[in-house]
Image 1 (spheres, rainbow, N blue to C red):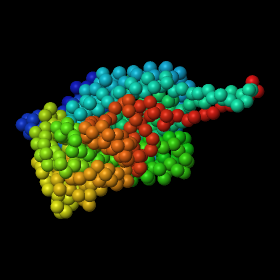
Image 2 (cartoon, rainbow, N blue to C red):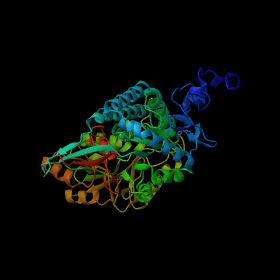
Image 3 (cartoon, rainbow, N blue to C red):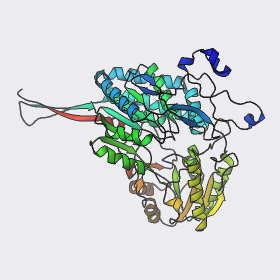
Image 4 (tube, rainbow, N blue to C red):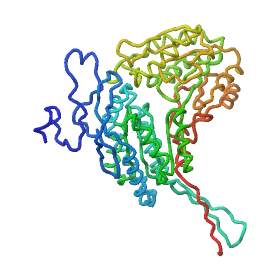
Length: 522
């Protein structure tokens, strides 16, 4: 085999077990100035086929995975369609009985081993994320540890699925309540956290005794496939964890199979509200269990009593993590009149001082590229609309010179609720600031959205903290804190931000059915 491979590929001692997705990184001054997402040869976890029934499945067609920083092709991945999706569902269904009957302790041990392998391979997994997603390598490393923590958490929760005994009204009866796995779960995940969004769902599903078919985002399938390789190494049985990567063109057909196949009992989706509504319609035909984490439009309120420096630090973390491409990123800053000018001034200085735009593999980078040019165009549209209606650009405001997918971290003042950036989720590095006068006004603006995932506010008034926390119409509230995600806490929203909760002790309930058993004649 080595004789017919390019020289850089032949260096691998185990070509059959490694997918080398491109030639070695280019050398020379130009390469030093700007690293692309090309991955070095010999990474053990790279795969290009779908994973169905424990086997790597290659299809005649393949689609490209591109580095958002340079636009270069990182590699090509099998383009699964409806047939492969149906095969994955059947494989999951066939594996379900055996996996569900395993003692909870055994499922726990295997999930724990999967967690350990993720930690052991965290550097390679992080590099894969940065190559296909573009986020800074430090953020990718943080995501891998966060992602692995869900496998650790649910490995422990697997042994805590308790039933119940209910006192019966009749002497000769006993009433039992059992919790059992729902069955095959279809897992549809986004590109912004290509590892963590999988394990947060899959960890709970496997702990409960379910099997899964994962459809990763077309922009970032490599992380899902790398997790599949580690699942195999961890002893997760064939068919329990399946992956069907597909292109944007095949996504509707694959999604329809996963939402309509009668063998699928549960759908878990993270993505846009618009797509979630489409999947709900498909799922209605067979009345599937559904949990969804959909769009957000998070408010960040700074009251006059706030510690301004803490508020600025929280704003920076909440807004610009992953270049503003997270569902819980702040989308609207509401700052009270008495503290407004001071906050804006300090926030602008912090942005200019702390944030550095660049390729994700550069150690200095805190802001990588946006996922694609369409995302950049949306940020531009929101800024242009705001400026045309009187908003002022305090800092940033345009594309970065590094390339078409890079955008300067931007801060706008003199923003009103009539502007697009306060009505739609931007999903980019744009921070619009609205000035308000009263607490009631801030609550009204914050709750005007038809979504309610996360909300944040800064205050040192204990009574106000209780009032606002209870009144914000969101599923998660950060009080004097800009980063709230944690494996121990229930993640999810209200209104059109979704259904159900992920993570925490509540997350496993999404994958369990309650069965009532009446024992009579005793």
